[in-house]
Image 1: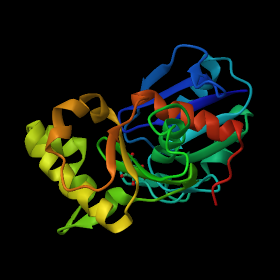
Image 2: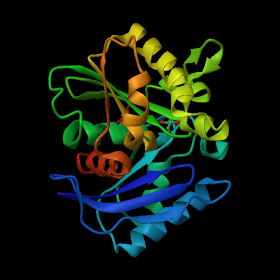
Image 3: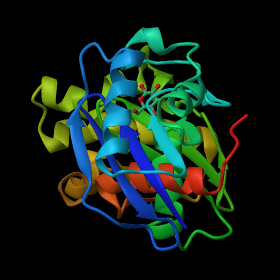
Image 4: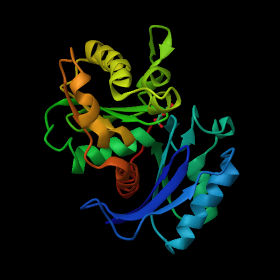
Length: 250
Ligand code: BGC
């Protein structure tokens, strides 16, 4: 029950073979800087390099930072716009000979977090999982079932997209303190909470490690807010899970 999981991010492309029954990496993860501008040819080249490095023959799962349906990239907000309309599953299959499942990066990370991380105990609940990095990714889980391609990071809140208001990129760029940034995040979370009334909101992405530094400033949210446990491995594990299960995302 193993598959190769790959996570495409704005700065790095990471991959590892994963035992999907336990979520454990079977080999050390490889990370290669994302080529600029990150065109399909460049990224596929990196993916086939990772496949060769692991001498991999089998299923491949790839988390992509945009909407993906039936293996085809539909939107690409923080990567090269050339991706739009590209059948990524077919390209990977043609290049590597391995069957590939492509899904949104936050959907992938959420799948892993719900099975192996902080989401485990939310059996009968409705959970919103967020990845907070340069962009804000989101995934909805109703009784652990994924509703794919939800794009809460692009929801406009007081005239600004949520990820431009409270993404981690904004925190770094504006050199905001945790308190200043948490105020922005709180407004975003309050909006999601009010509109969707989930039982829990799980915060993933780089900031999840720093949860203790900003959680005290989050208030007025009915849902339980908790940090992801798997941190930056979640995207790889979830992509491998999707591949192993040959998940079809319509
Ligand atoms: C994209 C999402 C992605 C998120 C995190 C957003 O800009 O639209 O699809 O999940 O960034 O990478």
